[in-house]
Image (cartoon, rainbow, N blue to C red):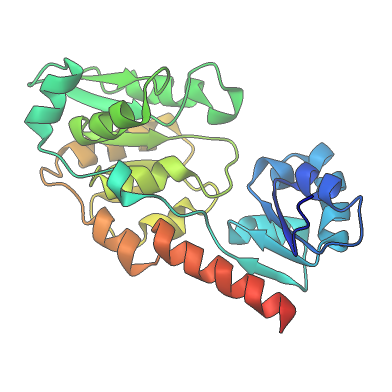
Amino acid sequence: MYHPDLIHAHYGLCGLLANLQRRIPVVTTYHGSDINDPRILKLSKIAIRLSKFNIFVSQKNIDTAKVRKNYALIPCGINLEDYPEMDKAKARKLMGLDPDKKYVLFAGAFDNAVKNAPLAISAMALVPEAELLELKGYTRSEVATLMNAVDCFLMTSHTEGSPQVIKEALACGCPIVSVDVGDVKEQIKGVDGCCIAEREKEDIASRVKNAFAFVNRTAGRKSILTKGLDNTSIAVRVKELYYNIYR
């Protein structure tokens, strides 16, 4: 029988379940909805108290949970090999997109209420020259190709933790327009071609048009590496945390 020295649970409810036993120490990572949803937060707070150590993916989640000790801020990393930079024309050809049209990729499925598609759709109605694409039903490889093919990536979510799609878009050099949600502001800080918009359709539409004027790909990939948000860098931090628990 396998006897681990440590359990690392992902998501607050999983952390609570893992802590039902008290022989093996538990590290729990909270990914956003387990903190942002008040109903689940009540249970996550129990996991926070019981866990040997807690990891949060954004400062906003730390503030919401009001945690004071035994925690670290460590966002999830991404595998840069899965999100390579590509020539835009080639990417459009692969995805069957019009080479001369403007495209904006929405950060999720239109029927996912948390992603707040109505705000994005109303904003894009003010940008009639562009088409808003739904991020749904694609493979990971196709998502990477789309992020290289479009002119802008748009996020209007009500809540987020540390959205992976923002890091993926950064890795592909895609200009980003997002409302201030999760840790997006921190992720895109210092990257020309990426900006935060107010939760108003007019401001979002204006900033999307500005993104169209950014003809080059962004330096998002360099930013990911500089901030240590690639999988390898994040793994080193988590591994060090494991060792510290036993020191």
